[in-house]
Length: 143
Image 1 (cartoon, rainbow, N blue to C red):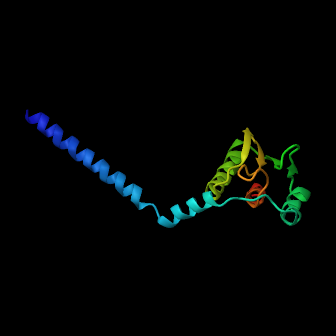
Image 2: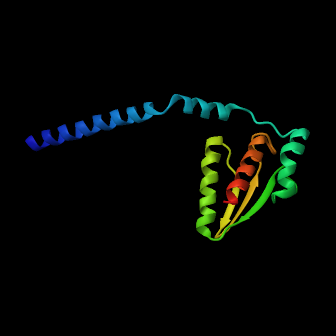
Image 3: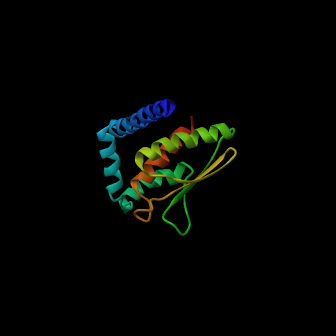
């Protein structure tokens, strides 16, 4: 009987402890981060205007290796690296920014090659987020 009571005390303590840790972890997140994340999801992205396509998108298409995808309002580029580690490092850096932006690329990786297609599904075409992430990819691919 004594061992059952000891077991109950230990289990009861661990159970209460896990509840308090869950409560602590759930309430320790910075409120501004939560608010920013919620707002970014609620903001309706709009397609690039003709002016934006000229000023923002055209430089990507002219000299940075991006091309328009046939049949879609999307852009595509293939990045080549020395080896898989560099390709994966590139994808990791892009993934960190993409997660902060709440905007994720369509991509495919085999060994040292990363193929990327950018388009915003919420607006059914290219948005400023696509251009921003594409420019970031260009910058870090040169490193």
